[in-house]
Image 1 (cartoon, rainbow, N blue to C red):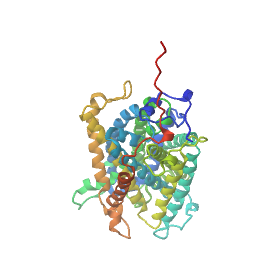
Image 2 (cartoon, rainbow, N blue to C red; image 1 turned 90 degrees about the vertical axis):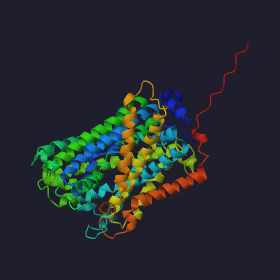
Image 3 (cartoon, rainbow, N blue to C red; image 1 turned 180 degrees about the vertical axis):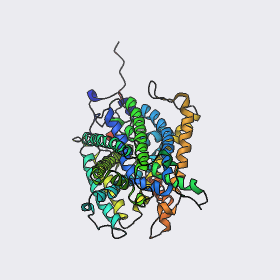
Image 4 (tube, rainbow, N blue to C red; image 1 turned 180 degrees about the horizontal axis):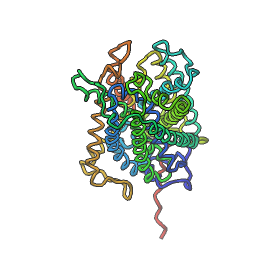
Length: 515
């Protein structure tokens, strides 16, 4: 039997849950910093910048830095739309429930399916970041191979990543309070380390700000010139600044979520932009040799070690490992809430099991285990693929951007029809709502096209060359969407309804008083 929250522990946000037909099942234990930490740990500046710096510089040179503020402005428009939704509908599995509320059951299910699948792939993609950091700290972390064979890195990455996924599965299974404590502690370490890194890099500057206008001749001879190279390089920024909606996905476990979730979303995104932008800027200005080929291979790890020395550099890299760990934890947590939200609407196979909340740990245990196993399976399938890093990461991010569009597009439609009303007394964009929403949709569509473009240098940069890797975004995502919607159409269409264990009790009508 699922746990139910006693009346004396209920929050004002429980009314929003009841409006969806659900009863409160998850315990509200998270405060302001916990929700902020969930959002910023999913974005995880140290994870993203260290994992993708080489991609940006390799394709766009130092001038790729300008993609960072460009992506921030676009994602800010999306985040502002989400803030209005988080204030009005602070429920678990935010993307799924928002899409369902705004666009109907079909679109809601598809948006939720995309996000659940994206979370599983993202869990695999983030876990691969261990391989880019741990072996540079010590050769001890070369558990499989030593890097001499073309597939050694991929095999070792699968092993290290699987260990990380097992850890996040166990933590999430033992309850949100343990997850929040580890996540908050990790975020504190990450924020302190990021600020210290900024100061250390700033103290070692070797060149001026004009550096970020240099293109190193990249894009010459191509049809679009440097603009084409810049679009490719911008993927390094687009791959980082997402996941801020995690703060709202924990709405049923947060105190006063209508007020705190919108603030957490904006704080997480703005803090990530400022801190990440400064790290990237000072790294470009401080690295001793800006033309070193190791920047395109070893990335920001090489910059830190060559600029700050091995002792300080390795201390920073250990902080990056902590950041990767809490990022993985946040991604896993968000996926669990999405699966739980869909299952209590009977939207997934074995929904009654997936939606079951452990009476002891007060968290959905089954989706924690299933998502972890699927993520490990994705890694194992790609164990001999040197392209595993770019292919897995790209597919995950595209599906997340599509999931975001499943919210912003129907929200725009509701605005144009005059049906959208922000929560009274809570976060509201006012008269700026329509233009912000329009930009959010245009931005999301443009980035999906840019991310999915079948660039051989992104999806199939090294041998063996396969057409299905270069067209992987269209092929794999098409299969995921087709299989998922086929399952919905033939198995779940017309059967989406709150399951018995999660359904809110219908109050009995009052009997008229006796005369």
